Amino acid sequence: EFDINYYKKFDKIINVSEACTKVFNEVYPEFEYKVKTIYDIISENLINNMSVAEKGFTDNFDGVRILTIGRLAYQKGYDMAIEAAKILKDKNIKFKWYVIGEGSLKDELRELVKNNGLEKEFIFMGTFVNPYPFIKQCDIYCQPSRFEGFGLTVTEARILGKAEVCTNFPSAYNQIIDGENGLICEMDPKSIADKIELLLTNKELKNHLET
Image (cartoon, rainbow, N blue to C red):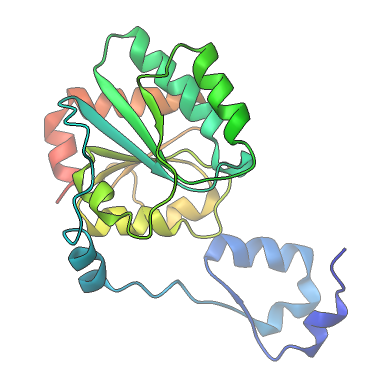
């Protein structure tokens, strides 16, 4: 259990999003006077340069590439992503959903993929020192999280010009204006699948989100 006395010793307490600050202030209102929000510092030049520094995908797939990056943990919502993938497959959409990340739920999620018959569509890739070529080469970036402190990869994908689908975790609204620079959906598989399908059927919208 966290010792609240640590907070008494700090001069400032920094949160990475307005959503985090709001929650912190609700839990510890006595320290609100110390709290500031500072977003992660991101170098657009570095990300763009790293996105072309390595090869990226090597499977020669010619369908739709969906990508998610994050730990294989409950908060990242991979179970919802897998169910959304099943919805898309049942509609005969040609896609592969790639996952970059490792974590404690790997075996459980692999079993869920198998039970849904998605071994060819939902691909666990492990981790990479440089994930940016994969972001640059994907067609849609999806963040199906239940919670994110900030959601750094959401911003990185926007820098690389990707159309994005994010669940409505609070800090998503610090980065995305729904319909303007990404799509925000409800935190359930059908909503995730519906927004992805919308991007695949509405080319004008997808092009708008990529600019």
